[in-house]
Structures are given as C-alpha cells and as structure tokens.
Image 1: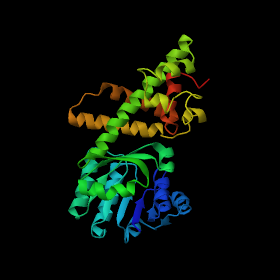
Image 2: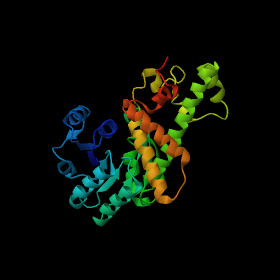
Image 3: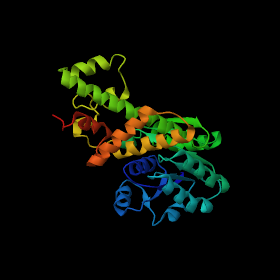
Length: 295
C-alpha cells in the first residue's frame, strides 16, 4: 500500500484524495481550511494537523494548491524532510517558472518530481476521469503514472520540467477563446432568429465543432452535462479560467509569442469576473455577451 500525503483538499483536491483512498492507498491529507479537512475525513482520508505531519512516512506527496507561491512554500517546507526517494507531484495550475523552481527544490533534496496539472474540472475530479499533463523526467513520470491513474483517465507525458504546465496553459488559452466564440455565435443566432437547436445541429457536425460546443454548450438543453442546464453552477469557475488565461499571457510575454485572441479572452473574463461572476462556470460568460440574463 502506497502512503500518500495530499496537501490541498478543496473542490478539486478533496475528490482527488478521496479517489486515492478509495483505490486502497493510505492517504493522509491537510488543508488550512478546517471544513475541507472535515469533508475529506468522511471519504477515507486521514487528516493531519499540518503539512509536515502529513508527510511522515509518505512514499509520495501530491499538492493541489491555488498559486505558484503556495506550491513553492509547501515544497520548500517539505522536501528537506521527505523520506528517501519520495515522489513529489504537483497537480496545481501555476506559472511555468514556479513549476521549474519546484522541480529544483525536489532535485536539490534528491527527490523525483512531476508537474501534473489537470483538465476535467470538478466533475472529472469526482469521477476520476481527469486528464493529467505531466512534466518531468521519464523515471519520475513512470513512478507517478500509477498514482495519477487512480484519479484520471488520461495521463500524458509532455516533456521535461514545467512542460506539463506549458501544455495546460496552452490548452486553456484555446478553451477560453473557443468558449467566447461559441457564446458569441449563439448570441448572434438569437438576434438573427436562428434557434439554439438548429445552430447546434449544424455546427456540431461541421467545421464549427469544438469541445466548448459539443461537451460544454453555453446554452441549456442541448448537452446533458453542461453547467448551463444548472444555472451555470461551476464545473470550472470563471475566476480560474481568468487565472489560466493570465498565466498564458505571462508565459507568452516571457517567450516573445503573440497571442492576441488569448489577450482578448483574458480581458473579457476579467470583465466578467469584475461583474461578480467569478464563482460561476466560465461558460456563463454568454450572459455577459448577451447583455442580459438567460431567457
């Protein structure tokens, strides 16, 4: 039985840790928010009083946190005290520079490490169907894969340190821009008198097809799993999409890449977030584009 320390038990981390426990791993978790610890305890996760206490005897450490600063703080605290060969896996979505610094912290302590951000949202975390985009050495990836497989359906090795994060922000740049384009098309269709169903039937089987349309349609009644069917209750919060788009812009500036659509998407999600909609699903941006509530 693998003993896993899991740091960060929020909307994503909580169900991910629960799936590891369900798979038979000995999972010891910690979060600064007591209510999140209480929820995780109900799913078979042992709760520690601190991250360092969760580390005791761990074969692997998984972090699922909000920012690069938090990841580096936790890894700085834990890597010097980890057991020999303990594997460090970060599933947070953070900037590439911080991810590479985290790898350096692990390497300096003689520990293997993987950056493994996820796609799939809360529903994917609960159903253990996440996609993991992994950066790190071949050996570290091979060690991480069996653990990640208990939390996801697809695990992809994207290359060296930090390239899992690179894949994640590139993917979400495409997703954010595609969702806005999809929402704009539906709003235009409304104004032209074209029904939602007719546009869906055409675009879903022709060149306008995208995941944003066929799996996550921003209007209700067309795709069973769409948050639009539930008043845009978040599967993936708009605030998190904004975070990822800003990470993409930061990476683009550092790499000298032009991303005008990504920049426009970031501006629109910033406006949506400023309107108090950051906790809603990112597909709810259609209501801002529409200029009124769903009707």
